[in-house]
Length: 216
Image (cartoon, rainbow, N blue to C red; front, side, top):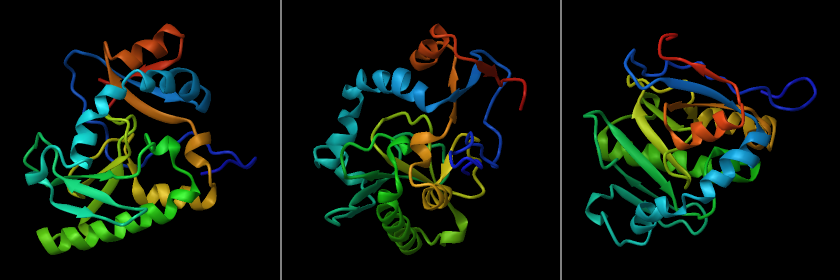
């Protein structure tokens, strides 16, 4: 939510704890400010453009076409729904936005609200028709940090736990209504395991991080 001076406060979620264990490697929570994003995270993202190849192969109909659950061809808001390549046995769908250049929630502004509302509405209809799950049984959310920096969201049943750093689409819509540039201006938390490349970049620059293995 925006603070009294009109800028967003640090983002915090009210959902279930991170899935942590007491075993190595250690897991850390980092508070990423907008300046951190511009000076640390964004340069890191630019070194990982090759990681997008699997996304582009799906969007270009080069691979995994037999796994696509649904494809929407809206000229502005189109998307592909597909299950993750590795399943934990629970209901889980990925929704890959066709528009290029949106890396994560950090890029979302109030201008993207119509796209998010359209995707949310269409996915609710598709899932009810194909799987029999009503909208009130589902969580639609983004990871932050995502594993792949092309905008995609996750759909799971509400009985499945999500991370504190996951951000519900409904919450994104609410925040962008109140503050159009919320996710560009907010401090966002994320978690990383020891030896993660992005974590090391924050550590090298002396950014504060909290060990969370034994605190949940």
